Figure 1 (cartoon, rainbow, N blue to C red):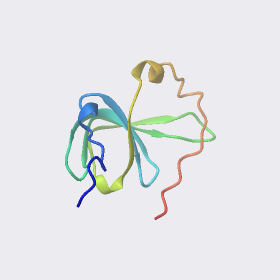
Figure 2: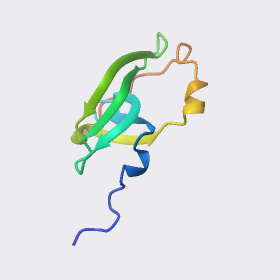
Figure 3: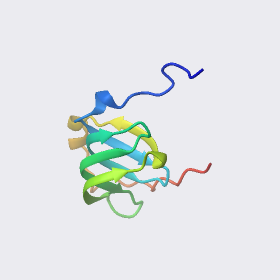
Length: 101
């Protein structure tokens, strides 16, 4: 028998800005426009935040983007006011390492 509530629905995050961390360490940010039972995600106005210890965070525009569910590690809602206050040019951070399974 399957556990009730073992997975969390992404329905409350529809049409909100989300951040997705992928299994290979990428950080994608955009508006969640769709998902399915395998957590495939459709993200509108998507951009990747590329972190570096030498330069500021580079924002790579991707447009309408689909992420395969088996590559999704974490999905979270972005606080847009807090996010807008961050100076990404001055932010220095090491890129995330890929997940090991």
